[in-house]
Length: 83
Image (cartoon, rainbow, N blue to C red; front, side, top):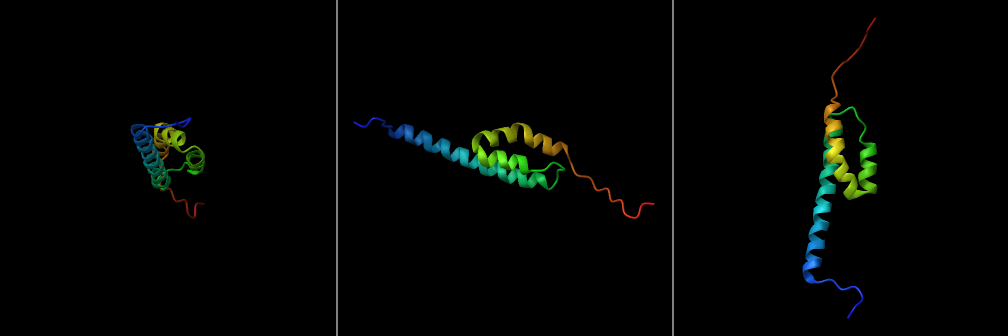
C-alpha cells in the first residue's frame, strides 16, 4: 500500500477539473485579445495575471476585467489639421 493512493474516481474528477481549468484559461486569453481591440484599457496587466495565476486570474478577469474592458470603448475621434 502506497502512502498516497488515489482511486480511479478521484483521478477522473481531478482530470476533469484540470481540463475545465485549461479551457477557462484559453477562453480568458482569447477574450482579452478580442476585447483589447475594442477597448482603451491595456490588456497587459490581465495577461500577466492570467499567465502567472491561470485559474485565479481567469476567474478575476471574467468577474472584473471583462466588464471594465467593455465599458472603456474606443471612439473614432480624428483631430487632423486643427487650428
